[in-house]
Image 1: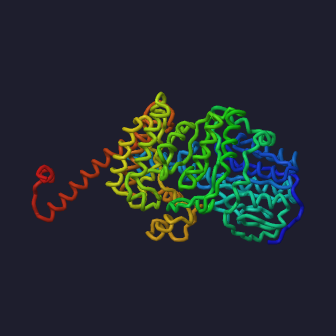
Image 2: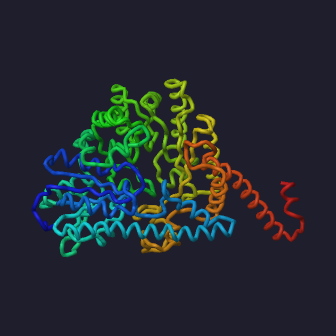
Image 3: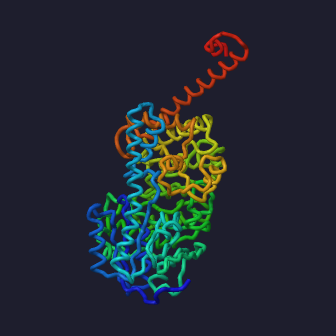
Length: 546
């Protein structure tokens, strides 16, 4: 690729595009890395999530005019609308539109859905407008854009972004360092739209050596990030990553494409030091380990144990969690997790090995249940006075391909087993559905089954396609949807609030619905048998006789 300019950057402005308030970990790690490699480069972070919507454009203009940066790097987290999050009720809207028996609720949901789609489209247009604004104010500067949305939809973004923009796919250290150095030797996986508007693509295997990532220099980050103190403190949750890459091939997941399928590990001492500084210096109480999975392979499980050993040796006082995989859990490791501050066990869960295997989740259900018992016993040994405070968060891909009434009932039965282990109030079944992502096995399967049209646009504004990307087809979709809507009226979505949690209420409603569904299927079968035999005996008689 031909470089437009060989000038090295003196100033970099990072702009975190609007999203709900969540720790901008990707930018923080990137700015820290650049500072340690190029300490003479001046950097600043502008987090538009912390700026009122009407003031965002002015805030960006102000910082650009004050800094006159040589590079403006944008971070774009979300791009699709079907994924519910704390500021998005898309799931509730879809459930009401598809499954509510109340016509008024369905009509209101249709109107709300148009609003969600409009906000989704407007947000996308505004983000591109921020890039065009930077180009207009800084015609000679180089732009860069990365983040989760970019890693999934990089080619689309490259087509829409201004000229002289580097579109970073996956991890950004190598690419950003190359940009700062003048882009004479482009590096990392990226697209590049040159000054003529020609797009080129440089693929690269994710191979950045994570041992280069020492503990973040938070004093430096605070000096360049005016919004830093809005995130730290006892109420905030800070993301810390310990590894990248995922060797598993779950049918609906893109992590192994975004981060690569080879796990690379940070130095456990540096990870523990990072957590300890956050706790002691900034009063951070809650840590979320942002890895695709905090422990999964035997090697990564040993790595986790080394991190916990370091945290225990330092006496670090935090509550932590992350997505766990329990294939290699031992009673000793469970004890270390509890002793070091494990607040919740967050993992994917379904109650049958059949669904586990169909989604290629790569674990044994009975082994997972045994791991739950290890956590129960470890809590009783390590912190008997706190018994019952460990939360179990079950992320359940309900109605996944292959789901049936039998597998749903099995899932409900397994959840009751977990209730008995930890107490019903401490188990949080999280209701979610598979979000169909581009270039995943589940997408190909659904296209082959004519559920999705071949060649569909995953960024379409067609509401009927958008709705299908939240996979919950009939007939089970209606049972699950109505069970959820009934729960929505009487329960809470907050896992720490008083009252019934929506996931527990939904599963309870779903169990009753499955009983009625089974009875209706039986009566229908008896009715067919009655018609075929020419008898007029009522179905209830057959039922009683059976």
